[in-house]
Image 1 (cartoon, helix red, strand yellow):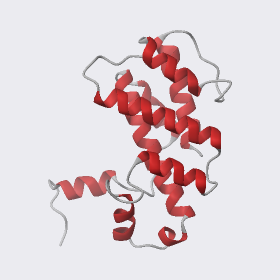
Image 2 (cartoon, rainbow, N blue to C red; image 1 turned 120 degrees about the vertical axis):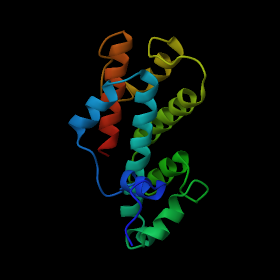
Image 3 (cartoon, rainbow, N blue to C red; image 1 turned 90 degrees about the vertical axis):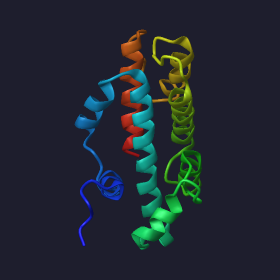
Length: 166
């Protein structure tokens, strides 16, 4: 029996496709549109999903598991449900190095702060910009594009896309 096209299950199944990764060009364009809050939250969500793929391919019990088992492992209250747990497990497995782990945790903290504040979020705010600087050279791969909100956002997106390809 086909899913109801208006069902939440159908929508979730469509957007929770763990085997399809967006191409970098479209991803970069999406991350540069909208506001800074949406860029931070969206990039973190994409990295969270990328880590799921990394873990599925690196954990033998998940690489051959059914979709139900994988869903149980990554459900919110499951053993790999939290972004922090996925980051640490990928590090413990040797799938990411210490620098990537630290950058991912920084993005996780940025996401949590940006997603849960009632205040306006912008890279023009020193609080967000100063934490974003942790991602850039010398810790990261890119130098700050320019000391403007747009420069921070461009560099943030570039570092995030590089992590996305880990």
